[in-house]
Length: 381
View 1 (cartoon, one colour):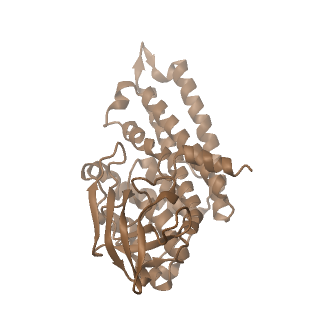
View 2: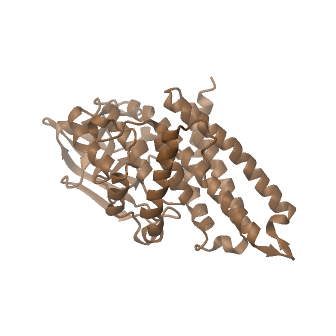
């Protein structure tokens, strides 16, 4: 279990909120995790229940149906969801999509979409990645051309989390023929827009309980009020919001690593070989000691990063470093913990198997580890 009582980052209000999060997730999500993996998505009823309990979009202001809290509350949901081992796409809605609307949306856009995102009746996604444009967003090909007072959007996106179920998708597209970072804008595409279609629910190595789709836009007509933020200002908005996305992934990575370690300790205490507990072998103790040390360092660093972000001081390079370190450590912890389970670790009935499968993509999405190193390197001077 994540022990947050001695983490100075959190107040009594945070602790009370964490208790609520645990109770709701234990009731609504835990009994359905196998079903989510079988179905390839989280049912809308679960979204509505989690929203009704106040777990979605904590940072949304009260004027738009939210509680107006700080990112530390988001982090609590991310920690508890990841520790549980659920692949539900709640954090994408709360930590990523909502802030684009809060910071860049018009009053009409905020009132139209945010209340539903808070109460779980609206599911959202953000579509950046394309078949030939992943970590390098400047390579995107989707384009929106002026059409009277509106736009015509054409292109395709892939690997889009919540893509099958989303009612609202923020789509990144070019609004000029010019390449590079210039001429990228953000648009709001809604379920039912003519020309907007979805491909199959993609078959992934891990995170099977989280729907991931290909999205297609065939001359989708968008009224002028579907432009989010300034025309040609999309790349700047993406760069402003990516640090929080990467911090969110770091939060999830740290919590997942903690659960993997806890599962390894529990298993090696119970399992015996050659007449003694697996835990009593030096190799086991040294492996767990190494993980325990990294977890101790990780929690301290994570709290520093969250506090710095809440204060508005976390830089893009610092967020990239957090994403890099915590997801790499997550993979080390999950892989080492699975190894300590022996053959049992390869069986899906054990939690470590799910943790291990789901951990692999964390070093890829939100920007690969290699891209994080490149971004950190550029900040050096």
